[in-house]
Image 1: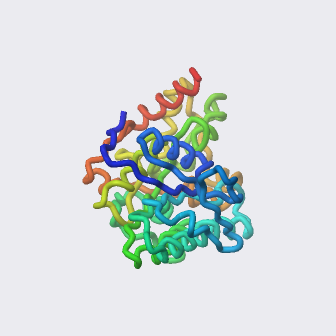
Image 2: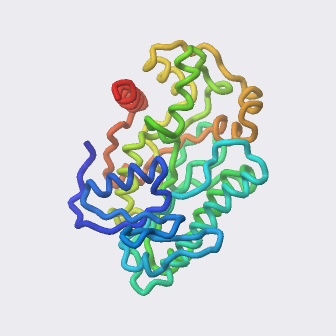
Length: 314
C-alpha cells in the first residue's frame, strides 16, 4: 500500500475524469476522503455536482469552480493513431487551449484554488540517447519534434495561473502500465502469440510507471507544497526497450525473438514511431525521490507481474 495522507479533506476539480487515469484518480481521491468534482462536456443535471466547460466556445463555468481547493487537468486528445494534419491539430489544441482556459478562469477567481496540477509528458525531452534526464533537464532542441513542441506549449499555457500566485505542477508522465488501458494491452497480443520483439535496436530508454503509482504521484503533487513546475512522473528505474521486451516475455513465458526494425515501426505507426516508440528518454524522478515518495512498483518486473496476475485472475 502507498503512504496514506493525513491531510484534511479537500475538493478537487478533475478534467479527463472518464479516462484511464482520471477515473482511477477520482476513485482514489474519494477513498482518501476527498471530493472529486468532474469537469464535463455536457451540462450537468441539477442534482449532479460537476463543472461544465465547452472548449469549442472557450468557456468554463467559473461559478461552479469557485471555492474548489485544487484542479487536476488531464484532458487531451489521444496521441494514438496516424498523425495526420487534422490529428496533430487536435492533439495540440485540445491540450494547449484547455489548459489556457482553466488557467485564465481560476486566475480570475476571487477565491482561487491553491494548486493546479496540469499534466505534461516525458515527450518534452525529445530523443536524448543515454543521458539521464532529471526534472531540471532542458527540453530537446527547438523545433526537433512534434511532441516536444506540444509539451512546451502545454506547460506554458498554465502561465496565467502561475502569475496569479497559484502553485502549478506539471507531472511529466511516462509510459503508463495498466490492466485495461495504456500501452500494456496493446503489447500483450503479439507477445502472447510469441511474436514479441524489440523495436529498432532496443537501446532506447523508456520512462514508465504503474498506474497506481501515477495516481499517488498526482495526489502527492496536490499536497506537497514543495513540488512546483516540472515533476518527472516515472518509476525510479527506467529500462531500455530491450529490457522491457525481455521482462514482458519472461512474465508471459513467451519468446522474444522477432525484432521490429525501425522501418517496420515507421511503416506501421508513421511519425508516431520516431517520437513515441523509437525515441530514447532516460528520465529519472529526482524531485519525487527528494520528496520521499515511495513507489509501490519501482521495478518493471514487479509492475508487470502485478498487472498480469490481476488481469488473469479477474
